[in-house]
Each structure stands twice: as C-alpha cells, then as structure tokens.
Length: 405
Ligand SMILES: Cc1cc2nc3c(=O)[nH]c(=O)nc-3n(C[C@H](O)[C@H](O)[C@H](O)COP(=O)(O)OP(=O)(O)OC[C@H]3O[C@@H](n4cnc5c(N)ncnc54)[C@H](O)[C@@H]3O)c2cc1C
Image 1 (cartoon, helix red, strand yellow):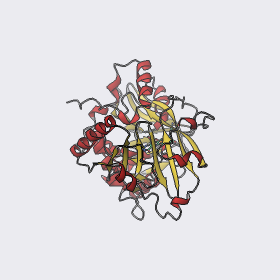
Image 2 (image 1 turned 180 degrees about the horizontal axis):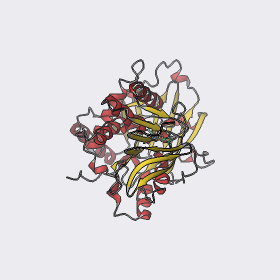
Image 3 (image 1 turned 90 degrees about the vertical axis):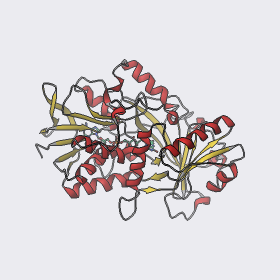
Image 4 (image 1 turned 30 degrees about the vertical axis):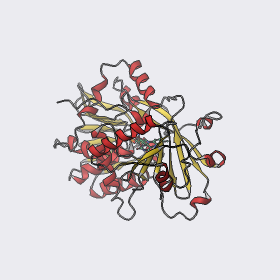
C-alpha cells in the first residue's frame, strides 16, 4: 500500500474524482484517491443521482459551475458523452408563478443562458405526454440536460488514472493524522498514509468524518425518494437516454425525466427525513412504506398514478444551511480541505476550481462565498434547522452571501 502522496483525496464520488481529474489535467499527479467502496459500483450519492442538470441559479457562481459541468460532460467520455442536452421546462399554474419564471428568464440571460417563456401549447409540444390544461405557461431552458452521473464519474476516474493519479479502493479512512492543528495524513486499517494536504470529498459522510477531529460540519444527510416506472408504450423504441426536456413543477416540488423507455420522478413535498450516516455504508435506506408515494401530485402526468414502478429508491444527499457546497481550506486547520455537499450538477466546475485553489492558481470561479467557515455564527441546532427548512424549498434557495473580498 502507498504510504505517502502529496495530496490525498478521501472519497471517489463525483466530487473527489472531478478534483483528481482536474489536478491531473494540470499535470499534477502526486495524488491518491481513497474510497471505502468500489468506484466501479458506487454506493455513494453519485450512484443514485438521476442526473438532472439545470444551469440557471439565483447564484451567478452556481450557474457558472453548472455551465462548466455541462460543457465538460458534453464531451466526456468521448465515445458517448455523459450529458444529453435535452433542455428543461418549468411550469406555471398561475400568474404569480409566471412572474417568477419571467424573473428567471432575466437571470438566465444575465448568466448568458438561453431561456424563454413559453405558452401551454408550446409546453405540450416540448413534452407531448404532459397534461398542460391547467397551466398558464412555463419557461424553456434549452441548455439544460440530463446526465449519466456514473458515466461521468468513470470517465474522470479513467482519465485521471491514465495520467498517473493513484486510486485505492476498499480502504476506509478512519481518522486523520495531525501535528498541532495541521493535518499531515490519514489513518486506514492498513496503516497511515502521510501527505501535505487532505481533501475531504465523502459526501453524506462528511460530518461523521470531521467529528473525528472534533469539528462540527454544517452538513446534514437527508432522505430523498426517486422512482422509475416500468417501460412505457409511449416511449417504446427509445434509442436515447432522453429525447424530451426534463420537467420541474415548483408548486409541487416535483421533477421528472426520461430514462430510455421509462420515466423517473422525484419529489420534495414531504417532511424532511434526516439520517445519521455514521454507520451507513451506502447512501440509501429502505423506502418508507405507505404515505410516501401518496404525496406525489400527478396532475401533470395523470397516467403515472396507475403506472407500475420498476424501482423505488430512497437515496440520501447532503443539505447545508444555504443549499450551497462547502469548498476550500478549513480555517485554523492547515492541510485540511473540503469539497462537500457538491451536486453532480456543479461537480465539473467544482473539481476545476478546487484543483486551481489546491495548486495556488487563480480560480476560474469566485467560490469564496462557499467557504466552509461561513456558518460559524450559527449554532449546530440552528444550522440543522435552517438546512432542513430548505429541503421543501430546494429550488428556491436564496443567493449565497456575496463573495468576500
Ligand atoms: C435520489 C437522489 C437524487 C439526486 N438527484 C440529483 C440530480 O438530479 N442532480 C444533481 O445534481 N444531484 C442530484 N443528487 C445529489 C448528488 O447525487 C450528490 O450531491 C452527489 O452525487 C455527491 O457526490 P459526492 O462525490 O460528494 O458524494 P458521493 O457520491 O456520496 O461519494 C462519496 C464517496 O466517499 C466515500 N467515502 C465515504 N466515507 C469514506 C471514508 N471514511 N473513507 C474513504 N471513502 C469514504 C464513499 O464510499 C463514496 O464513494 C441526487 C441525490 C440523490 C440521493
């Protein structure tokens, strides 16, 4: 087993692999990625993400990170890129929602994204199996898309490995080695690996791992349901992962995409359900029985109510008090870096900017507003409550604090 690498990345999910990929792309390969599982069969959140990639955001930085991710996954892997740019639509049932969508068009334009308001008739043409009779209109964002998160993950791992980055699987990190406040290595069952810096990219396990250093991370794992229908006749013969735009319905905090000849959908209009991830080895738990599916509002897709499901998933991802990621070096702990609460949507851009920061290069995106220490004024209880309150409001999260000078 390796006993030293200049940079150790803990976590071979989409965040960790993206950082490794971007470091390697800059010619820096003294990197070891450790994962407690197998990256070829990811048990973290990346293995579950249906991969809806929306580029528009209240935060210009998040929008830029998503756009960088979309550009990257539109070209890797080379033979069959992970992103399919089918676009997205968001619907409105009344004028108030339509006003909000008009505001989103302005914001998209500010971010350099294509976006326009569309009529119910156009919505029906874009998504032919959607019932538009109760809609007054919507927004169409043609630059959005759906991606295969695993294919993106494996493409980045393969490229990083080909350039010389080392990967060690089935090797859980148990604790950190420190010298004063400085982190100088990690401890595994096989022994200690010393390093100049550690990047923690362990997703929902971040808070538990940071507890080994006595640090409270404002990161809260929550359950999130996503289900797949059986193959549908109306999509029979589909040769692509998706052909029509993904759909978001913010009134019912519901979303839907195609998976070949099946549909998949998820929803957020249920009580946030937290999980203690400490002893979990995979980012999912049993699907809560009765009641969970009853919360789904089927008015846009009435046929779904009677469509059997082929698979029901109760995945887990991380919430933070403002919905943004935790990126950068931990204050007062030299050598300890975080890339936590990263969505696949932002992972390509996050890997790029983290690589730049780690190498002391000028960052392409100003992520200072996502510094891990930004919630220091919140008590752990307040941080938890604020994070959970955001779950039902996931698509409305407020702009993060302005970047600090
Ligand atoms: C149902 C569901 C739907 C989602 N939908 C979307 C979506 O449509 N769009 C979107 O952008 N995002 C979506 N997400 C969120 C997205 O999946 C996650 O934010 C993202 O995958 C997190 O990536 P990660 O690399 O940070 O974490 P993970 O993918 O969880 O990777 C962390 C890795 O760290 C490893 N690890 C943990 N602890 C240790 C340790 N001590 N030592 C060594 N290794 C360790 C794990 O084995 C794991 O491989 C969804 C998530 C879920 C669950």
